[in-house]
Amino acid sequence: MNYELATMWRRVRYFAATAATAAVWCAAANAADLSIGISADVTSLDPQYLATQHNVELGWNVFGALTRVDEKARIMPGLAVSWRAIDPLTWEFKLRKGVKFHDGSELTADDVVYSLVRPLAIAGSPGGFAVYVRRIVSKQIVDPYTIRLKTATPYGAMPQDLNAIMIISKKAAFNATPADFDSGKAMVGTGPYKFVRWTRGDRIELARFDGYWDKKPPWEKVTFRMMSNDPARTAALLSGDVDVIENVPPSDLERFRNTPTVRLEQTVSWRTIFFHMDQFRDQPPQVTDLDGKPLTKNPFKDIRVRRAISKAINRKALVERAMENLAVPASNVVSPQIFGHHSESKAEAFDPEGAKKLLAEAGYPKGFAMTVSAPSDRYVNDDQVAQAVAQMLSRVGIKCAVEAMPFNVYLTKARDNQFSFAMLGWGSYAADLALRALLMTPSVDKGNGAWNWGKYSNPKLDKLVEDALDTVDDAKREALARQAAGVAAADVAIIPLHHQIVTWAMKKNITYQARTDERSLAQYFRPQ
Image (cartoon, rainbow, N blue to C red):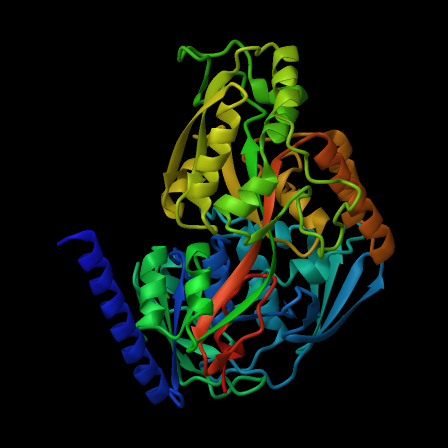
């Protein structure tokens, strides 16, 4: 078949599919079911086991927490109607009365206490949930709807931390393992939807919980379809196989904009995409001289090398080309709208000659070789971004190979310290919370640095973050958090690239308020 004929045939099929899609969508205008194509696998249903984006996203459809956030990531009441610091070491939370679990039992302070204890007791948990409850030294049940949490030192981030801890039923989940949640046995929450079944790697099915305490959920049945392949998600929406897709591929945006039966919703995400660098081993893996021989020292321990890498990256070109304008250049560990963003730090200017000069000063006049590691299905255009960064670094003498892989494989290897230059994306309510997870000196006892893959350590940053978290004065806390973010930026602790612009595409008869936290929450998709 010649090129012209093939092109004509593709167009015929496309317009036929578009017409069929329009017919399907019109028929579905009053449908009671919602199908959402999500961009990565859910790996665990246990809401306190592994804190990946899609695990947490799914959890929010089934469970609830004491606090929740609106579409701008502002903390608001959840299962608690109010909270206050009654003294510097005591937080009091008042529970919402009449909240029912999916099995009909009522939520009480006993369930909250059990939910706050369990993250510290899950054997082999890789998820870092323990950090959110580690500051709590005692729990006092005042009455069935009032609980007081004591800390050893003042702690201002308690309402944000407890947003990460989903409340489970003590009755249903007592001594439950992650496998009990995966099977559905322990999947009893207070959320808008009840668990029905999970076909691993394919879909999760939920049913409306008519006893939900908030507004009645709009859909009788919700199906989350796991579609890490970008073209597959796009095709599924255009064919009517799903009603909504998240993380719309930039290459398909124009197509969707020109499709009258599609609605797009976008916002700047709280997620920063960056690279961790191995800063703890003398001979990090996947880093050699240009002949493939091990280096005598770790180049990432030298701030001149870290700064050279940052200068070698053209963030404007990265945003325009690799991200197709679905991002804004980053300078900080958190995006500009987030509490504690250090506005004085600016995105590193593209300066390849300056990068070469710094490499020479650091003892690498001819550069060195390394592997750029990244997921291939987790962030918007993640593998393309890795390729673009590798090309930019190669132009200043750092010869790069790219290793991209599915996120579930990638995460396991990253946690096993198999990478030296590794991409990660992170979203947070506040800079001090992000820094605690990403850049504080790792400490199992304190729960700090749970995602500090490069094992970066800076006592000044540690102290500022601790001081920020140790105050219940929001203004003082934000000033300290901002200062800590500035220290991380000045020390090039990580290589920030960009903040994603997150996009949902959906049938025209569905509305959604784009969320800074990137979550696809079924209850907020509304039929028109």
